[in-house]
Image (cartoon, rainbow, N blue to C red; front, top):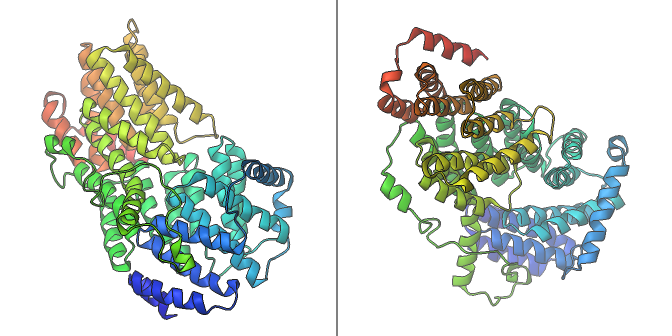
Length: 542
């Protein structure tokens, strides 16, 4: 009990020493598993994902539930067996499988799931898939328990990421149905909500529904004592509120509260992600100005105080064995910095790309989006898959107008095609409005197109965005349309688009953009226009 208290208080060294004492005195491996789990969770909470991953992997290897070395054909065999099982077994049959009550088997399944979680955070894809397959085969052999929804949610992630969104939705819904079979404290419930929201539900459910589900994940995780996952649910809910175009002032208040509470709980693993998202929102709400020269020169030196590195290996496994290990303190620190920086780098360049793009600094945005794409290339979540194509497409359109380089136009077309494919993955896809805006940008670049064709394309994108509550996309679409018709000297369309863009930005809470638009296009904007105010209020009701 004392070791868990010391770990919870952030006294990692003392907590680890006490854990080692418990491990050395344990009579059976089963007696060691609760200590393994407590230590792995504590390491992850304090941003030491590499050690948490290595620790969980070594524990599974010692128990015999995970192989010491990969044999590719065995992994492929396991994938095939698991895939066939879920394809051929109905939801009702899965829900009626025998209940696992044996404590030793439960601990084994939980330890494998901890390895799956840690492999996803490092990330190490091969271990992630292999540990999932081992967990799934244990479920197929012995039955279900309160940890089984996590297996189903992980399968939903892998299936949807592989392109089968129909099966992904089925498995995600099944994971939630199974949660209801096991009331009370459910150790992995928070992860179930997080995974299904991030990789499945965000594609087709409304932002409000997804945010509410993240809130359920937060409450479930906090109730089970999994504070790290609770705060991850909260943080991703804040991010989805932003991408779902909720009011920025409300998001800022919630984000500030999140960072304060994470500090109180000592949850370091959400700090990097949270600070980057907050900086973006603070900038857009006009809380501070940016020196663009300094902003562009920023590098990765200040991300955890280290340069960024390449891929992550299996880390130092000495914690499990109790030996000192061969990894030096400097190398271990580098590995921690590398793992921590991957997540923060993704969110830093995601935010910086938007900050540059909103103010049409396309050269700068192109540099940032390349770094964002590189940092997030391993991630198949809705947010990253959609935003990589959407941002890249908008930047390509701007660069083509500036340089007339045909490569940029081809890039825009490719990004539009990417989003168009995504709209077909599920019915009523949330990608539709962004896809239509890239289409409007593409149509506007085609020489010889009649003005009404371009007008129809922009209006379709804007109206679709408003009907889906995506006021951010509607505001940007209005501004881009106004700029286009200003360039081609179709003054009769310019004023209405700029006027609507101004009020959509104001409604969203994006003071920096509204002020910028008023400063640069003041002759087209009347802040007190009753027509614009009525239009804005109408769009809010939609």
